[in-house]
Image 1 (tube, rainbow, N blue to C red):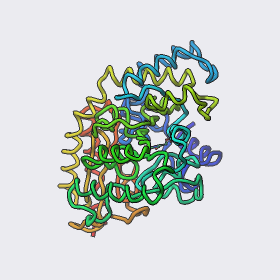
Image 2 (image 1 turned 45 degrees about the vertical axis):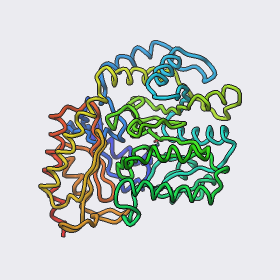
Image 3 (image 1 turned 60 degrees about the horizontal axis):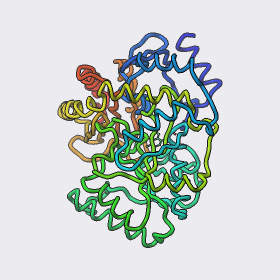
Image 4 (image 1 turned 90 degrees about the horizontal axis):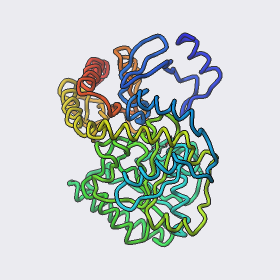
Length: 439
Ligand SMILES: Cc1ncc(COP(=O)(O)O)c(C=O)c1O
């Protein structure tokens, strides 16, 4: 099929997520290799978002493709009540990789299901029902995880699972909340403790956070927040769940983002980078006390494809590749290169409001008026120029995702310095269309 035929049939006979299908103008993608993807008509695109911040080792890595072919000759599937070598090997590897006392893993098909099972595990373990979550968050597209989610994707799915209390992030909309990072953290934790008192600490099972917030703005926590939060929650017997579906497994320049805070959560959830999206897989890792509990008490959850042997084989090969090729180190090494490239954009383009990145996890925000701090568009709205900007990027050979007044810079962790600079060169060449509308 040519590109047009692919698009027409996809649009006619399938539905696209988070959109009215008729409003989607999908790129027809035929193949992908390393940091590049190719349309059906042969146009090369530098993948500057690792698809959904998920193809961390890059596309079609030959070593993983070879491991997948080999795995096809082995055990493809056996039911979740069986023990398999793939399950044994990957679980031991994850236990060794994860700091602290997180040594047991429950496997799912993606991030939302990992979080669903973390809600379940927290409730069963603590005997409490309520869950705390933050507004600047996305935790998945299922009924319960959309209620944990703060962002507008929740609205059309309300009311969903009861018992979620959403709180403000340590990123105030109004800096009278605090001027320095330590003031912001102290104020946020004081406020959170007050919420915990009003809700009844004995009724709250867990708090979910994205350790570094992803689609809601690439927001690393302010210094001291993770430690303070960990201490506050422990004081009330509330479990800390770090959702590392997007920020985990190397994206930030460390294997786990919570390592930046010098803490270990009670539960960590993973997906995306776990298989670099080569096959669907998620995981919930639990600390020893929680694992001990479920050694004696029933874990009331299951999935036909829980611990799917083929998917676990792929994850093992992906993690081996990530480690052998030191891609986490590469993300850390290229962090200052990305920052420097963003600074250049800010210097060259009046449309750039601000930018930030941790490892290869970055975003650039655009503004409405020269020299002002006003975003190009308010929260949850868009501007026609963002569509034009995306089109210009694609024409010049780069794919990324725009959201509201920002665009993402999250390439695969195998990217070279030259390829990273190439990407920013393309962005530099396309940003003029946004500069033109800046007042
Ligand atoms: C932080 C976070 N948690 C959970 C999810 C849900 O993962 P999945 O789409 O694999 O269900 C996502 C997906 O983008 C995510 O970014």
